[in-house]
Image: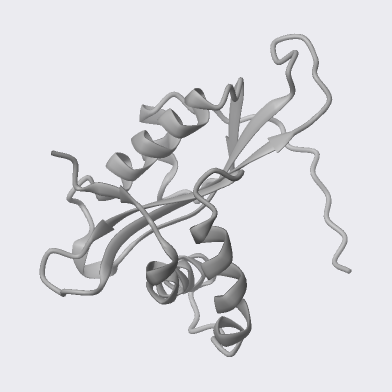
Amino acid sequence: MSLVRRAGPEDAPEVLRLRQVMIDSMFEADGPTEWHAESLPTLRARLGAADGDFAAFVVDHPERPGALAALVVGTLEYRIGRAGNPHGRVGHVFSVATDPDARRRGYARACMAELLEWFRERGAAQVDLNASAQAEPLYASLGFVRKPDPSMRLTL
């Protein structure tokens, strides 16, 4: 029996907590958390839409009932098809986080395996993610490769 399960609406507060763990670890700071309250209703709704284009897979914390040990979130996106992906389905992984006291147990890997299978079942031909230096070995072991990234961003 797998330790990994699909997150539901009831997991939303813990999903936000682990997302903050990830954000804080990437930027080495205790970031603001006021946004959690505003984000919570939207996240609950997304987690409750089991057949949509959004999925979160989690592992319950073995020592802290009601807490999550690990989290992986992804979305399935449509882009106009091209060679190698004629249907244009692309997975995007984000918010990969493990609680600091639950690391090095394989939880993130197990969650990633479930998310990758979810993408396969939905016909994704490729999966993209942004990797921190600390997490890159995990992703490389799953077959991810670095690519030249010409991305840009506009904040609205």
